[in-house]
Every structure is written in structure tokens, then in C-alpha cells.
Image 1 (tube, rainbow, N blue to C red):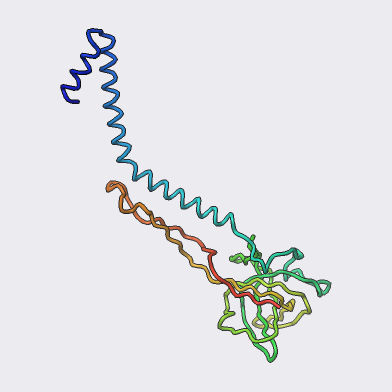
Image 2 (cartoon, rainbow, N blue to C red; image 1 turned 90 degrees about the horizontal axis):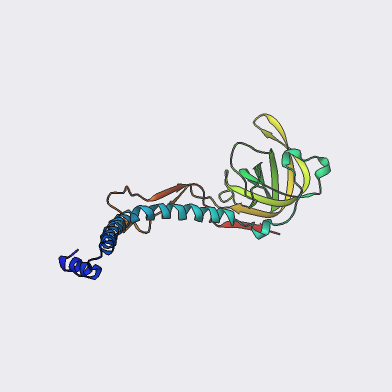
Amino acid sequence: MPSWRRTSLTRRAGSNPDATSRLCIGLKYCQQVRSETKESRRMNPQSRNILVAAAGLLGLGLLSGCASIPAPLAGDYPDFQPDQATERSIGGQVRWGGQIVDTRPQADQTCIEVLARTLDREHRPVSGDRHHGRFLACREGFKDPEIFKRGRELTIIGRITDFSEGTIGEFIYRYPVLDAEVIYLWADHPDLVMLHDPWWRYHDPWWPHRPWLWHGRSRVSGQIIIRK
């Protein structure tokens, strides 16, 4: 503090020792506050990085929490899987999904062999080793195997019309057959989502800095819907 400023403040305090003591304490406090303020400003970029990370996590959480069911797949259907279907199930309407094993165009229809999976809240198949057998979903007309490729995920609403025997290797397998009313082909999702710190130009040189990387699946994608 300039000497003229200290002299001015001392004159105001006069000869009162208590006032002088309070003045000295006040000056030390101001210096301490200024020092702490400078330190906090230096730390601000670190705090910004933490806030950006927290905001990213919150945003991803909100996106997953706000997931909605596609309109063509909405509705209530019996809660059983293809490997639980019996002759008594014929005529019932179901909502099943999974991964395409094979697409077989025929003279007047196309049948899709599906490895059944559990469906999530959006009625999208859940990946993993768990499955519920296989089923056939048939639909009149031509469905291109280059679009309905092996491994693609789909969800189907249809009526169980019959059972059909086929072979998997040398094993004779009995497939439930659906007359598909809705075929919802999910788009592939990327394996990596990258979020960059918007404040990267202003980061603290003493703070390690790099883009934030989030590994996971993005559900922002298109789809092919085929309905009767």
C-alpha cells in the first residue's frame, strides 16, 4: 500500500491505540483476501475443467433418462420370449426383437431369421451373450439382404402364425413364425462419443488438459420402419 494512503488512514485513526490496532488488522486482512483472490483466480481453470466433466456426465445421464419408446413400437404385449412359445401361442400378437442371423427372399415374401434378445426400455434389443432362441419374421414383398444384414438389430411386432422346422448346422430347430406387422430396423450406433472442453483455449498451463472422452453408445440415429 502507498505510504500516503497509510498516512491518511493513520490520521483518521488518531492517537487511539484501539483504532490503530483495528486498522492494522484490517490492512492485513485485506492483503490476505487479495492474496487468496489471486490464488482462486489461478485455480479457476481447474474448477472449470471439473465443471465441464460434471456437466458432461449430467448431460449423458439426462439423455439416457429421457429415452422414449418409438411410436410404432408402443403398446402392451404378452411378456414371453420365442423360446417359450408353444402351439397355444399361435394367433397371439407379440413384440420381439434381436439380431438378424439371415435374410431369405422368396418368391412372394421375405423371411428374416432373428436371434432373440431381451428388449430395453426403448424396446431395442440388448446386446450380450444372453438370448431367447430364434424366430422367423416373414413379410410379403422383397426385403434386400444388403439392408437387412446379419448382425443388425431390429424389433418386430407381429402375429404368431405357425412353427417351422429348419437346420442350424446339423441340428433340427423349430422356429416360431411371425407374420410381421411392424419391422423396426435400428441404425448402427457409434462406439465412441467425444466431448471437448469449450474453455480449452483458456486452460491453466499448470493443469493437465486434454479432450474428455466418453466410451459408450449413442442412440441418436435413424431407423427403417416397415408397417402394414
